[in-house]
Image (cartoon, rainbow, N blue to C red; front, top):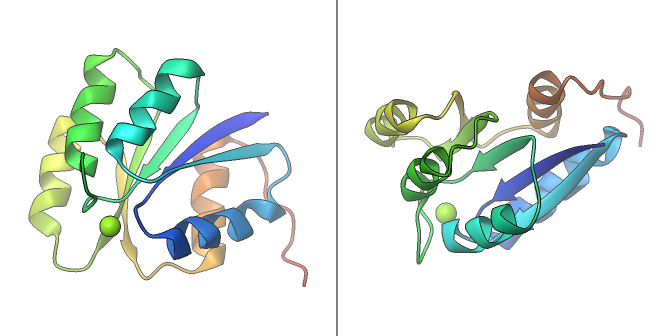
Length: 127
Ligand SMILES: [Mg+2]
């Protein structure tokens, strides 16, 4: 079982991620609502992948990325960003993020991304 931490202050985005990953058996998705919440979860259990928003209250995605790398954690981090935040993406990559994707994102694209970064195959989409 590979563990993915999905960090976004939008409850709709978190629900979207939860629904999208249903087609990937072998993935366990944990939600966090900001960077601070994410770090609390990272201190309790190991994860294999983080997907994080940038703009969030309390602790944003860039601070989260810096903190995760300072903790010595080496798993992949993907930034899920809104159009127009290119500068933030550059900073995020510099701080240790591995990849980025732009919102809006389709369910299939999110599924493929998680599948690729965890090496867990996604099942064909069914309704
Ligand atoms: Mg946000």
